[in-house]
Amino acid sequence: MTATAPLHEVQPQSALFESILELIRRTSTQLPDDVVRAVTDARNDEEKGSNADVALDVIGCNIVLARDSSLPLCQDTGTILFYVHTPAAYDQLTFEEVATDAVRAATKKGYLRQNSVDSVTGKNTGDNTGPGSPVFHFHQWRETYVEVKLMLKGGGCENMNAQYSLPHPDLGGRDLKGVENAILDSVLQAQGQGCGPGILGVCIGGDRATGYSFAKEQLLRTMDEASDDPELAALEERVVEKANQSGIGPMGFGGKTTLLACKIGKLNRLPASFFVSIAYMCWAFRRRGANLDMQGNVTEWLY
Image (cartoon, rainbow, N blue to C red; front, side, top):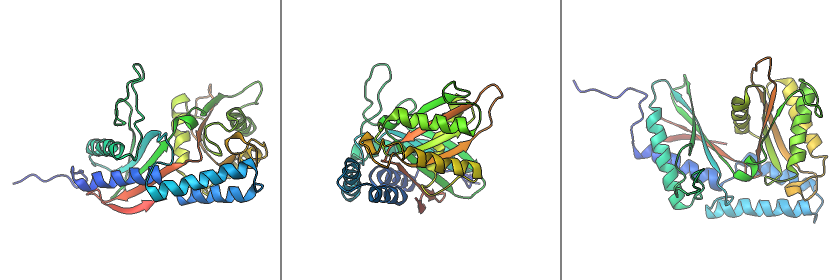
């Protein structure tokens, strides 16, 4: 009897490779509709002819040119972060191998810049691969299809990430007021750097590593998706409102649009620790996704 592959085993077929390659192209060159709407709405709030209005106009032109020319939205195509949900017994090793090959191909085609360098020698690998590049987060679920989401996070906004340990002498105690003050302090410290207007992903709790990781996962939510927790949903709204009263504005040029959104989640923590981890995302909020069948064909595009 001839052995057959398990139902959920990925075969190294071109369908998966082509699907991931197209996902990379779309993520790098086409800003999601919800982000485009947020940028457009923000410009309508700014005084015509102001520095903020001009900055948002340039951003809008950048978005259109990148989409129409199939060119990267930014010269820094960023850290390549895959978030993948797979059925049980699915061959995640093959997925990683095929996706890594797709990253190499996307770099050669110009969808991705040559952004991965050796941390000691500074040597560029030339194809965006190497230790820790690209990044994969795999999770199993009980669905019968694969969900893959891709985020490209540039170095400028990554530099504006922040982490606080509460209580803090200047920011307050281990409560939502202390959390709010910590988030707003991170915005103040950024001063429009990181290519604002920004979008924040926040994690309350966890440890130093899981807090940052979960904060980035909050950025997979859509711009209009509020937290399921009423207190956190109110905090998300309050942070954006107060940040936009700061006068920092797009790129730090002044104006009413310092943040486009804030997404907050929480993890359990140890009694001895209370971390607030903030992942700052630039206006080039590059995240897209797709649902795939077991052969790797796209059945639905996300975002």
